[in-house]
Image: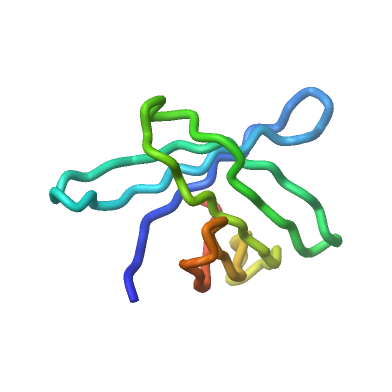
Length: 104
């Protein structure tokens, strides 16, 4: 089991929808750190849950074939902070786990 740092950036557009990017930071096989930025599509499942799916790599432009992440997340408030927590899997079907985000 490993921990990977993922940051989500939500920007509200004029039509009240959101532009979302994920920033995933991990170590390559050669030991170098890499951050991959992806466009993320969002579907509102209910008042307290969303489905996020990475759809396209924004940076680096020459990144090898990615296994995009799909996340089913509950929207909660804990200790006065907005959090997203749930499960994820990759589009290759080989990786999965739990995931947690806290609003800063």
